[in-house]
Image 1 (cartoon, helix red, strand yellow):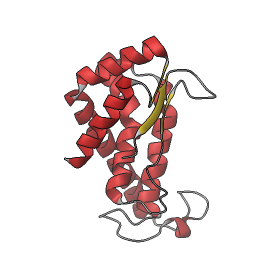
Image 2 (image 1 turned 30 degrees about the horizontal axis):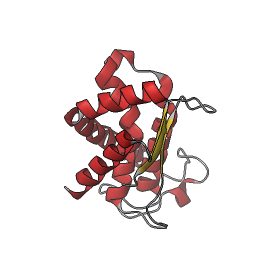
Image 3 (image 1 turned 120 degrees about the vertical axis):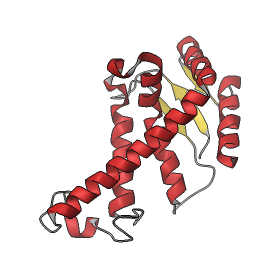
Image 4 (image 1 turned 30 degrees about the vertical axis):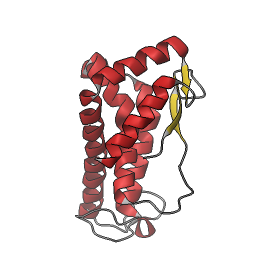
Length: 171
């Protein structure tokens, strides 16, 4: 997983805040495990809201993250052949502009939707497992963001978070 460069709660555009990751190296290829980790990162904000406030009190704040996770999962399934169930095929070429093209059978379209949902939920479950295990760190990071609004690599709390992420990756 790429280290976090900056986290902020300052609104910009449609985002109520964001986390910026800087790639360690230039990549043109991604492994399935890397994409699954990206899904967990994307779902982290929504998951944190659910843990802290309860599922009934989640907001629309994570909408762009959910959109990004869905986009990644669709590519994993329809372009990159990363679905066990659907196999190493590129469905996007056969789908045309949309995901409901009549070039695919209704069953295949339904299977794609199920696989995408499964991947996003798997990412959400991983983020929940990590955030529950590290609830103390989640709260510390939350309080630091409320206090400072923006944390970057130079801030001790964010550096500690990156060290923890590296530790988790090695497990």
